[in-house]
Image (cartoon, rainbow, N blue to C red):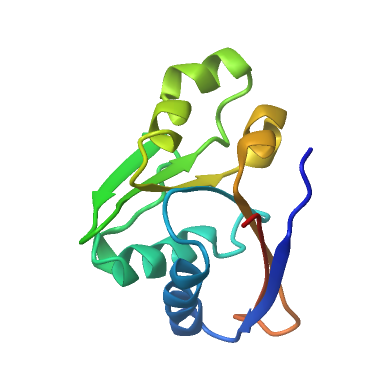
Length: 150
């Protein structure tokens, strides 16, 4: 797997702080990018996507939901399309192919955010960035490690 060339550590202590980090991250990871979101259930991945969608003018935070059952949500921003995928329920590369991830990633104007993409070596190989999220010591504290290739 290719190495990451840059990284940034971030911390938030509230849901609103996680939403606000969405703007910071969209500045770091400009489209087109395929971004893997890592973290346990409840780590705040969808909350972060809500903040990113709002920062891009793609959707209001309250309109962004987890695509656990639909697999893909698409939002059109001012300058970029945002795709939010959840691969938690997928198990095989064949199932992954049927979602159309590679077409989304190759569209040229998209920020593709993939929850549970680390389940698939093919996704990790093609990823331009990775955001690892973990619960901090306090209830709403989240620790983020953003790594990307330039």
